[in-house]
Image 1 (tube, rainbow, N blue to C red):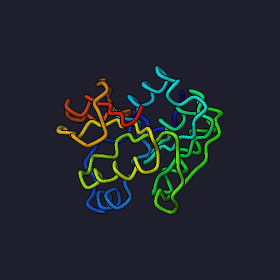
Image 2 (tube, one colour):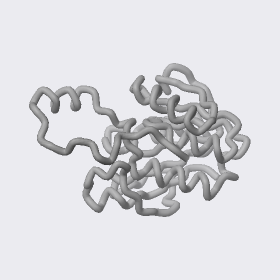
Image 3 (cartoon, rainbow, N blue to C red):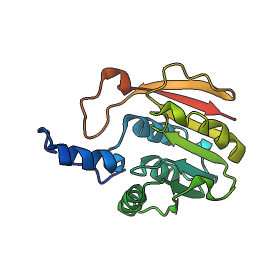
Amino acid sequence: MQLFLLSADFPQHDLSPEQTQRIMNYPAYWCFCWASGQVMARYIFDNPELLRGKRVLDFGCGSGVAAIAAKLAGAAEVIACDLDEDAIKASRANAQLNNVELAYSADFFANDEQYDVILVADVLYDRANLPLLDAFLRRAPVVLVADSRVKDFQVDGYRWLAFQRATTVPDLAESEEFSRVNLYLAGT
């Protein structure tokens, strides 16, 4: 799989206050392949039977890494969902780069569509997002979560599956603790 990402030689100097504010107002999450997204994609490639022939939603798709992996692994339909219109554009470009066709959605809550599987990678960086896990179970019988932030993950219906190590690309020199990605599964 190939992705259009921020170049590894990106400038790493101090930013002006204006530049910092612009980045904070419009963070470009989609130009990285976060550790959790990588682990999710690897799990999908190693376990294609989980998605083969299924209707799959990638919630908070960012660069589209999990959505693209799902399609390459044999999912019948994959919807890349993200509130950030630039993430949708990035997912679309990355899907084209990998010769896969995805559907796109900007709002998970705009309808009550059902899915066979929902993928969730790097969404729980804000604990306020934890209630989304219940909403996912109302829309799909299987939910796969990859997360490196929540250390005391105890959500009814979800069980710990495995952990893997990965580093965000390009490397952001994140704390070592964020390279440990846990996978959780709800459903079969």
